[in-house]
Image 1 (cartoon, rainbow, N blue to C red):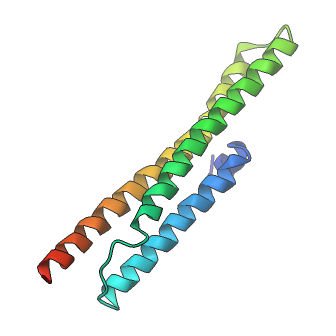
Image 2 (image 1 turned 90 degrees about the horizontal axis):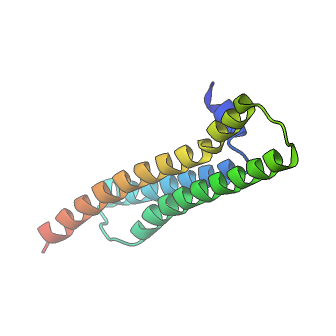
Length: 126
């Protein structure tokens, strides 16, 4: 399964999770540019990096819960359903959670690295 199949199978929330990841990367890019080129160090917008990751993770979990509830409703409506279909649906429900948590991990890594670099530069200039 390639990335696009994974993304498509994960459901409608995958796009929003991806947008949160892209937002986080854009803000991180702006911060890195300001630090590397402009030599400007501040903590503005740093919370946005962390919040984008947290929002992506929360949305991934919410998407999984919605998917499982929909699957359980379908199972209840169809009295006889094979275990393979149930397990296939359960596996797909984890895609959005995996993607949301991946965005969260990347955002936290970037957040903490940038924060430490900024703090060292700010304290070093005093």
